Length: 299
Length: 308
Image 1 (cartoon, helix red, strand yellow):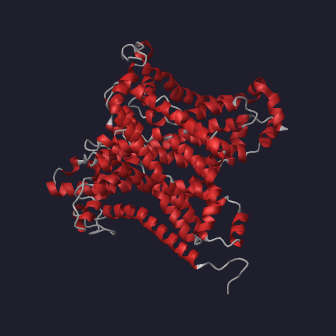
Image 2 (tube, chains in turn blue, green):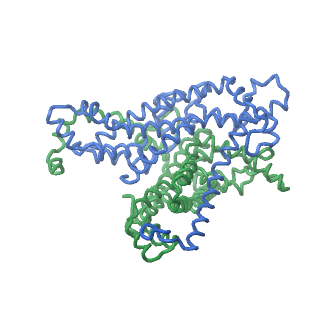
Image 3 (cartoon, chains in turn brown, purple):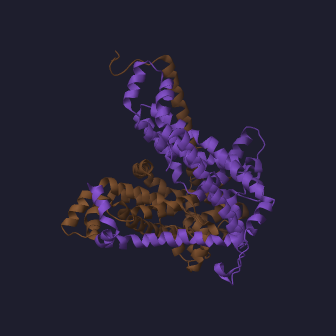
């Protein structure tokens, strides 16, 4: 029967309570999942089914017309390429700078670490604002330059805090002291001891910066002027939110068909822009959670 | 021992010994000076009349003229009202939900179900702002949107949700909750896993029901975490995000969707009225800083939890 030492029989009230909890969570699950499934299914339906509102759960009149059109559109392909570039280059720069700042700040014998930490964290509380920052970027000649998406927001203070507390807790100060006695320089210590031991935190930094960069649109909106430098997110905004469907491709079609295809294209675009992130997400969720927690415990 | 050694080390010995580290720290530090601190200097624009030809420092001082213009502008109260209304709505609706989600998840014994709920509710956090707004617009589109098609099947009149100023804040807030509740719950779940297990044993011995256990053990156990997150949220009510609101705006809902941040962008970058927009932005930053300090001081006084 029931093992009294490990499990005390639940009362009827408790069981009812648990049923309610399961029911509520199931509703939450459906509420979160349904819009995602709906979009995915719509992207795989025929243009006419989508614009007639015939899609409810699964694809109707299965078709990959949306994706075909999408991958023939030069504007979208350029945007995709740009976003890949910004994500790769931006992540490299951001992670490098973050480690360069966080590691010295984790060393107890590094004079001035508290002052530097203050300088860095204060920027979380107060900023000069949009226009003053824009003027700095402008003065540096970065307007309409690809660098404007890579440099002005390269370091996130939160990431510095996370990385610093990782270094502090997992690389013993004694180890650095000992290497110092043996005549090992700080740089060499960083290269041959710190970096190999820091793979988990570097993974977290890479993931967070990469997702941030892939999803960003604001810097591109204010700093870029030439359309062929736009990241995918800005192309998305133009096609879906401002409704400028990439019509150049569809001139030959009839008005109705064109409208239907434009509608379908929006769903396919959302899938194509989000899938890379959502596909890797289940494998990396653990790292994200770890990163958040390190920061929240020590920060 | 290490601490003592550190204190005796002093600046000069640290420079001599760690010169390589100072070299390494210089570029990121330079980044902060150029892109975070120089703009703070540039914020003097708020007290000047900006002439492109004269530059920031050559332009004439005008004292508080830009601020006075802003306070006397009829749009001022609309901006304050919209900013605060959307913020507090989000706080009131969005703050308790992740806590409830975490408390409920903590009751689940089936590891598979628990993991599935966590994985799926966390996922929307990775959707970009542009995609999020795109989804909202597709679902709420006046004719073909999912919601209006569904309303049609129920025999109800279709609505132009995004063209209705009265609905703007709800659309913003509930989509925000949809996107971030799972993410925000993670912190509370971690706090829950750190609650002293002997308290649960004691509760069990005393015959507490599940609900009593949540109320008397779980909630007090995560109260410090709740307080800190609340401080951060209240301290940031004026710093509500620009990105999503700007994308959701249109001519029909602008009366309830224009907030300080979007106004700064419109006036400053689109209309090139630099000084005035800087003043508006500076006003916002200063209020926000004051709020953050006051809330933190209050929390320190009443609950011993604070962020610094």
